[in-house]
Image 1 (cartoon, rainbow, N blue to C red):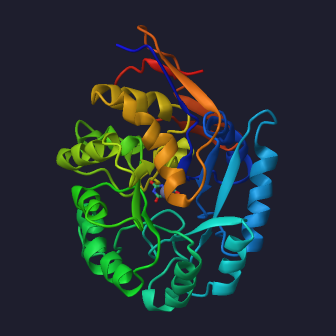
Image 2 (tube, rainbow, N blue to C red):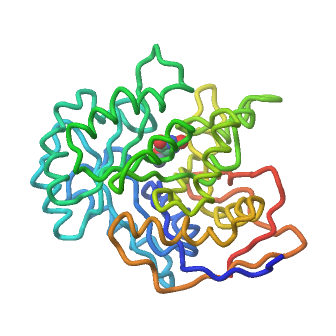
Image 3 (cartoon, rainbow, N blue to C red):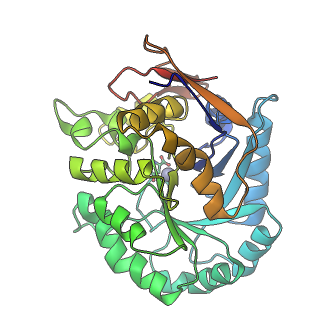
Length: 346
Ligand code: DOR
Ligand code: ZN
């Protein structure tokens, strides 16, 4: 069995960095191992305009450790009032890389998201014209729809009709969690792709609910049945260009997770590469890891892969990593994959 693996330095195509003390506490876990990341705009208040994105980008760069070579790729939070010209200017000037569509109420800080999709048609048409991608949180929010069905129903009721209205729009289905999501992406052409998270390749819904409720495994979209996890693993490890890593690493301090109404989000930035090497090794697909973490994402976004390399090393003894990340806001619990990790990045 190979003990080292050298690959193109990865990017994270879906990341929550937050702001202020939380940003300062977590940024190094990403900037140490990833060259670029698509930065989610769901701050309070959200990153809506290009001016918002410019100032958030400056705060990220100021918080980054000096020696780390890391580029934040900014996104704008789509609202029903978003100005198509502002979006286009931001994309053409290279300040923003994509827009994020949150159905209103779908997840953390999504209250300003979209309820009536007709109202965002002008901005989506503009994005299609200029080749700007849309990242989408693909879940319906209707209270009568079972939470485990919300992704599959979103595809049928919202995403597929929307793509038929604007077939030239480049779409990334973020954090796909179902076989239906994987199949939908596979049945389409080059304008549709999906990010997959580290944790959804490792846990199914039992991790959250069996043997006691475990809030640190709660995220949105919520982890599904085992058959879905297996479909995600097959997609990630197949090398298929339409699937790439977006960790959705989403830090919340422990008191907000361990609560009667706990926040959704799993923090994986610090051990993602170790977890992924383990998953790809289990699937006898280590040679496909680079495509998933470092090649497919830039190809879809129309960017060059990074020129730097990283080497992953396997040791017999389990590696050590912190179970908590300490920030000035409080502790953030690190994702526990429930198996020892043997791969580390040097
Ligand atoms: O689990 C999640 N956490 N899913 C999301 O969509 C948002 C994220 C967050 O911002 O905490
Ligand atoms: Zn997210």
